[in-house]
Image 1 (cartoon, rainbow, N blue to C red):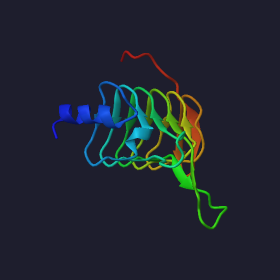
Image 2: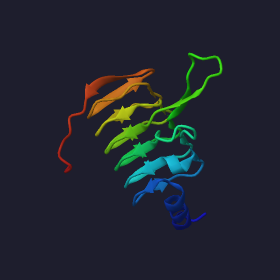
Image 3: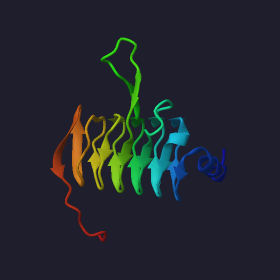
Length: 153
């Protein structure tokens, strides 16, 4: 479908959909009505978003100025392994403004990635990441704080 047609469809199916967004092909959204996407969000090819159907308050929220590399996976739903029948559990995933998530990373339920973070490629984020941090690994750990320079080069 042409990009302008896709944009109209996205405005209808998502809980919120901002301006100037690009969602590449082969991206999967389970329960898009549980997903909010801010402005200037770039979602690369092969990303996957798994929302929760049963737990209504759990959402996936993307702020403004976010870049997701290829094949990033975000889960807001899971199962409680303390029970043999593995009942559904879920918790919102919030990615705040000015965040870059490297390709092949996975974000698990309940994680908040604060403003200005960078998540290294291939990382598995199991816990929230503080503002302006660079986190890498499996599980992801903060390796340093970002030093932001002026926007002029």
